[in-house]
Length: 340
Image (cartoon, rainbow, N blue to C red; front, side):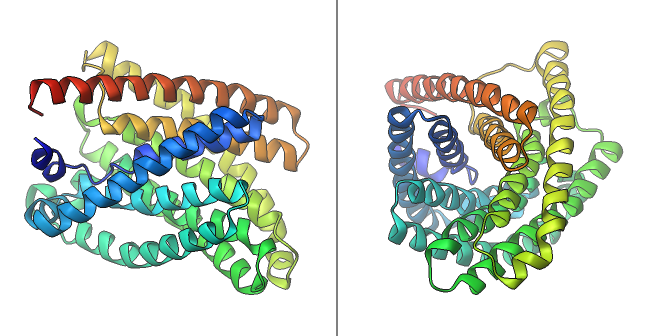
């Protein structure tokens, strides 16, 4: 049973860590320290278990890993490791764990750099029915999320370390790259939706990452604005401030469209709603949007935006709880039955 679970491990499994980490951060922002701490350690334990399982899978089931890498609908799921590491590192930094956060930044930055070149190259080299233009979907936006996770952690550490100029350069560079990547991925995904016309079964929760990518870009931008002043921050300050609001507005505009898509999928076409790893790719954007709204509203004195953030954090927290219970129930039933 365990061998089957590890062999079939979804490359996007770290989405659970991403979702748990950002909801923990959201609760910390709200002042719900006890529950926030509990979620942090759930995320840390899940991260450790998934790292071990992923290493075992890579060592023993390389054929399964290779199959995932060749599938453009699964390839970008490996970026959830980068994003999950960055989100957990940022949450640990809120508790003053500077050394752990620095290690997390090192892992996040190196893995982002390596995967950022390797995974897109593999995806675009796909042939036949798996050609990238026929398979580009919402999961590709995790590339953007991973990039901005580096920016947030670097910007959060910048005032606390000695190499402030270097950390600022890393944060601003990743934020800028993330914004450009968002535009590029959005063009590819939009082209696929218009040309290939995916079926209702294909319109999964992964498309919510399109909104989550705008939200994490907003959070990264607000962190860049708050960095200790160095010449680079002065140069990009106005651009970052304007861009963060534009990204937040666009992400907000996406929400009704995503809700309609969900209605079209599950109500109109009756695609069953059951637990799957992809549900965490909905929880993460919900939590990140709440944090982004709070950060933007506070930074620029926008009470309405701040209020939206308060409401969204409540929604994300409830959604996390429901999804976690569904995960435990589903996995428990599988263990009892002894199958997958």
